[in-house]
Image 1 (cartoon, helix red, strand yellow):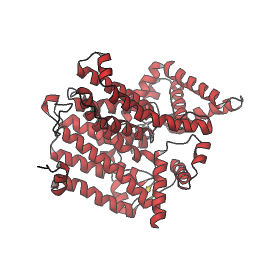
Image 2: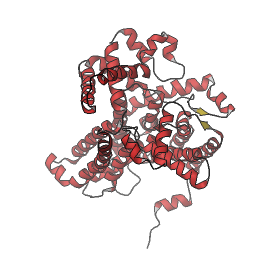
Image 3: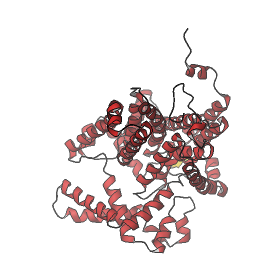
Image 4: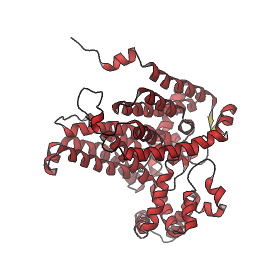
Length: 476
C-alpha cells in the first residue's frame, strides 16, 4: 500500500495558524513591492554597475577590472534585469520579488528548526510573523544592497548541520546533508566574503562535535566517514577556488573580493592607533547602530568620527598611496598589507580584544525602524519614526537578543541549540574585525531571532525533545 508523503498532507490541510503567519507578511510584501522605490547611492551604485556587466554579457570585463564585490548579488540584479526585459516590466519589481524570496526561505528555515526543537506552534507562528514584518529585514529586501541575499543561508546551514551530524553519528552514507551544508555556506560566502573565515571554523567545530559523539578514535572516525567529510570540504572549496582562480587568471589577484584587505587593514590599524583610553573605549561602544545616534548624544562629533567607516578607509588609503609611489607589484603590496594586518592584530592583543568584543556586541542591535535608501508611503514613514517604535526596535530588540544569547548559553546540553549558538557566535566574531554598520548587523538578524527564541523556549536538554522525522536526530 502506497503511503502518502507527509508534505502533501500538509499542503492539503495547512495549519491555519502558520497559514496566516506566512500569509499576512506576503500580503504586506506585495503592497510594498508596488508602492516603494529604492535609492541608488553609495555601494548600491556599484552593485548596479556590476549587475549591468553580467546582464550585458561582459563577463570578461568583470574579471579583468576586478576583483570586485562578491558575485551572487550582482548576478541576482542581472537576473532581475533579464526577467524585466523578457516580460517588458521594470527590473526593480523582480529584484524586490527575488529579495523577498530570500526572506521567505529564511522564515521557513527558522520555523523548521523551531519545529525540530518542539517549540510551541504559537511561538513558531509569532516568530515567523515578526520575521516577516521586521522593518529592517524588509528594508533590506527593498533596497539595492547585498545583505538580503545572505539572510537564508546561515539558518539553512543550521538545518543541514542537524542532518549532517545524524549521518556522522550513524552508519548512513547520505551525501545530501554534506552537499546542503556546503552549498549553504558557499552561497553565504558568495554574498559576504567573511564566510571564508566563518566556514572552516564551523566545519572544524562540527567535525569535532561529531567525533565526540561517536566514541571512536580519530583515525577510525575519519576512515568510517571519509566520504561525507570529503564531500563537505570539496563542495565548498572547489567552486570557491575556481572563482578565485578566475580572478587570478584575469587580474593576478587570487581573491574572492576586493573589500577584505581594505576593511581589515583599516579597522585593525585604526583601533591600534586609537589605543585604550576610557573616552575612546566608551565612544567606540556608543557607536552601536541604534537609531538615536547614541554616540552623537554623548560625545563630540570629532570623537565619534574617529570610529567611522571613512576614518577606517582613510587609514587604508594613506598606506595605499604611500605604496603606490614605490613601484611595487600587486603581490608585493598585498604582502605588505597582510603584514600590517597581522602586526595590528597580534602586536596589540589587549586593544584588539576589547574592541573586537564591543563590535561583536553591536551585532545584537541589528533591528531598527529607520532603514535607509528606500522611499516608503507617507503613513509608513510616520509610523517608523514614532519615538516608541524607534526605541522598541532599536533598543528593545537588541536587549532581548542579548538576554536570549545568555539563555541559549544555559541550554548547550541541547545539541540543536548548541549548533545555533556556535554558528551565531562565530558570525559575531567574524564580523567583529570590521566596523559594524547597521547593514552589516542585519545579516545576523535571522540567526539571532532563531537563537533568541531557542534560548527562551527550547527544552534544556537533548532528551527533552526529538525530531519529527522518523529516523533518529541529534537531539534524540
